[in-house]
Amino acid sequence: MSIGYASKTLAAPGARMQSVVQRLATPDRLAQAIDGNLRALDAALDYQAKNGIHLFRISSDVIPFGSSPVNALDWMRDFEPHLAALGRKARRHGIRLSMHPGQYTVLNSPDADVVERAKLDLAYHAAFLDALGMDASGKIVLHVGGAYGDKPRALERFANAYATLPLAVRRRLVIENDDRLFTAQDVLALSRATGAPMVFDTLHHELNREPDAPDWRALLDEAAATWKPEDGAQKMHYAQQAPGRRPGSHTDTIELAPFLAFYRSLAEHRTDSSFGMPDIMLEVKDKNLSAIKCILCTSEHGRFSRLEREWARYKYAVLEHDQAAYLALRALLKDKRTWPTVPFYEIVERALAAPVEPGSFRNAAQHVWGYVAPHATAREHAAFERLLEHDDRPAAKRKLHALAEKYDQPYLLESYYFVL
Image 1 (cartoon, rainbow, N blue to C red):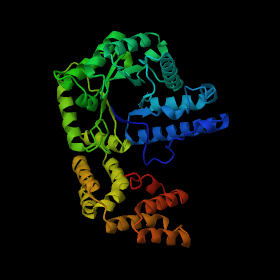
Image 2 (image 1 turned 60 degrees about the horizontal axis):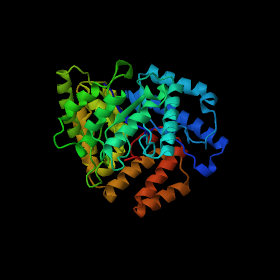
Image 3 (image 1 turned 30 degrees about the horizontal axis):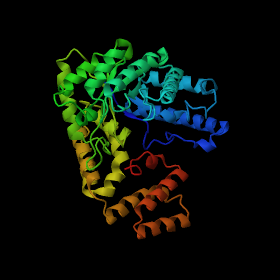
Image 4 (image 1 turned 180 degrees about the vertical axis):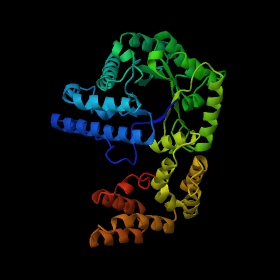
C-alpha cells in the first residue's frame, strides 16, 4: 500500500513545471519547456525517493500541447534518453506513476469531434507513460464524462468509444466515479461492461450516491474485483470537503483525525477481506505535505530524522501563527526514543489554523531574514524593513522568497514557510 499525491511538488526547488501560451508556442519554446518540465519531474522523483513517497500523478502538461497540432515536435524521439532515465529512476525507487487528463477529455460526448480529440489526448498520455517504460500498473484515470440528459445512453457511448481505443490506451485506462453525475455503482457497471478497472473516490461517493447505495467498503471491494494482476495494486482517491466551499472542493490540507479514522476502518476491513490494501491517492491543495503527514502517521515507527526533517520545514510557518505551538513542538521532539507523529501533526494543524497576528508575523519573518541578511544589500534590507513597517505580509514574504532564491538558501526554499 502506498500513499501519494498529484501533479505539483511544493517546497521542492527545481520541481516547478513550466507552461507555454499557445500564441508563443514555437518549436524552440516548446522544446525548452519540455526540457525544463522533464528536469522538474526528475527533481520531483528525487524528492519522492528521499521522502518515502511511492505514488505520484504526473501533470498532463508535462509535454505542453501534447495531443494538439500546436506541438509538432517528435518529443518521444528528441527526449528519448531523458524519458528513459526518468522511468528507470521511478522503477529503481518503486514510485508508481499515473496521469489524469482534464475535464475537456470527454470520451462519451455526442460530438464526434470532441470524442476524436479525447482519443488523441488519451493516446498522448499513454505514449508518455510508454516512453518512461512504465508497465500496465501506470494508469490513466478518466471520468465518464457528461450525461447529456440521458445517462444510460451516455454510458453506452462511453463503452462504444472505449472499444475503439488502441490497446496501448486500454491497458492503462481506469475510470472514476464523480461528484455530480456518475455514481460508484454506475461506474462499476461500466467497468464490468468494458473491462476498464474502477478507481473509487471517497469524496465523490459521499456527494453523489444512490439512497440505497452499499457501504463504501463494500463498493471498494467491488471496485477491487475489477483490477487484474497486470493492473497492479488497486487505486483509490481520498479527499476531504473544504468547509464553506462548493461541494467537491478539496481541503487545503488533509485533516488528520478523519483521515486516521478512515484508514483504521479500511485496514480493519481489508484484514477480513480477500483484497489487500489499495494505493491511496490524496487529492488536496498542499500536495506532498499531506502525503508525508499521512505516510508518517500511518507508520508504526520510523526514523526519527524524518520527523525532524518535517519540523525543519514547518517551523517558521508554525512560528508565524503560534509561538506557543512552536515551543511545544520543540519540546515534543526532544525525546528521540518515541515516535510522536500524531501529536506532532495535531499541534501543527492547530497552530496553522490560528490567525496570524502582526507581531507573530514579524517575528517569523525576522527569523527567516536572518538567513539572507549576511548576503543582502543595504537597499534590500531597507526595502524589507519598510514592508514589515507597513505590515505588507504578502509582499514581505515575496521579498524573502526572492532573496532566498537569489542567495541560494536551500533550507528556506525547502521550508513550508512560503507555501502555507
